[in-house]
Amino acid sequence: MDSKKFSEKQIRAGGTTGVELVSIEYKDKDYVLKTYSENKASQTGDLPIAELFSSDGKLPNFKFRWDHNKSVIDIDMFPKEGRDNKEGIDIINLWKKEKGGYKGHHPELIDREIGEYSVLIEIPWRKIFKGIIMVGILIDLNFQDNLSMSEYVNVKIQ
Image (cartoon, rainbow, N blue to C red; front, top):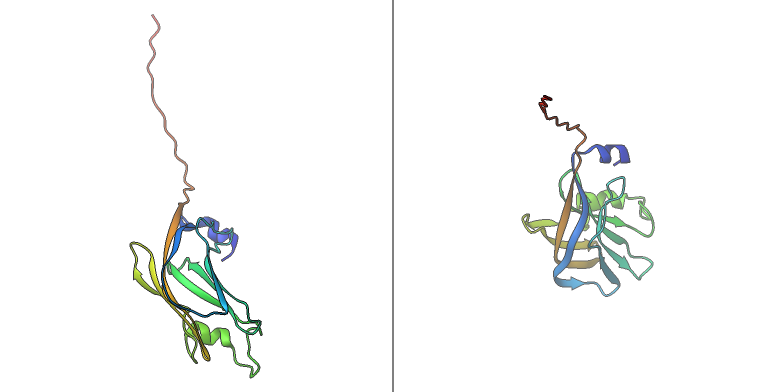
């Protein structure tokens, strides 16, 4: 989202609070998970929640972020070899559509009230992560209307 469009939103996610892993059923040994509590949204609205970093140069990284349009978490995949694999297939598109053995772009919202999501991340040849994450989102309210107040005082001089 561009910065002008984000700054003009009246209600927007301004940051994260209390990001915590409720449970980890599985995490691939070649990955490190980093969470971002108390994170602020960028001027363009980018709001990272967590990231899975691979120590293997051939495996993709994953970024958990806030989707402002749907008000839920999305997970983006960043493959090491780029958008297209060596066969010329757009693997980012497969990831977003969760096809061809790719799963995890849209975690399942378990409880909206406490911000709990079930996350399952898989690529065709490997299971990466399965667990539950809880995310608190700080809401920014943007008021651009003017507010004026006046009071009438009657003074009588004698």
